[in-house]
Image (cartoon, rainbow, N blue to C red; front, side, top):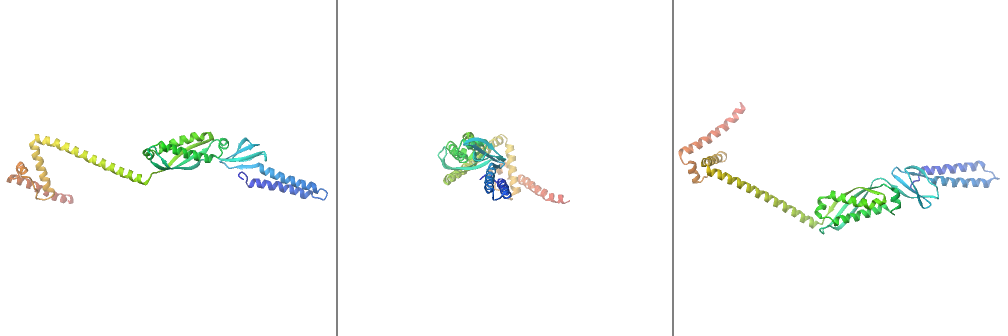
Length: 306
């Protein structure tokens, strides 16, 4: 029985031993009845005293009933009760207790079946209410948590459940705490561990997310093309009003192409006529420019070595 330990057993044997010792000392043929009575009295006293001693752990509260009515809460530590008159039907654990609960195949507000696992952290604040107001407070809080979870799932959209677990946990804590407060129990927190959806729906959601990412990529690409086209339109207006700038730009593009890639570049005849590359002076100037550029690159490593 909880509350009894080696200390009460030790007290029992000490009292019984003292009684037997008295019987042994006083034992004679003339007072055999008196010795027997002393032995019986010692045994009864040992039983009563050892039965009145209880020891509660630091986290326990003992609910003491006297003649069927609530008398007091005892513990922690050593305390005494009146044998026969007092009984201890409940030992209440006042530590924080964890309870796992779940809801299987429960429909959300948008009629999607889900499996939800959660953990409840709670403790007993009023052991008297926990013992007298509800028959089995541990089972009661488990059922209250499960029904509250089903109610919350039925009022929540699937997208909100997947994105807002903290909000659901807070709502569950509030609902469960209101239901268990009359039992002397407080809810510290509720943690939603996992939300499981059907595999087919999970694949469909994955495909939807992938399609959404592709759509966003195409939108971004189209917007980039639009911005480039706008810049080209602005540049065309600038070149249309300034032929010299267009001529210089064409010369620079041809020069960069010859410098980086090869010595042969296909250029439209109209562009050749515009840039006057068909003449000897134009070709000479372009060739001298390329040659000077290559000479500068060859001299650069030598300068670094010196």
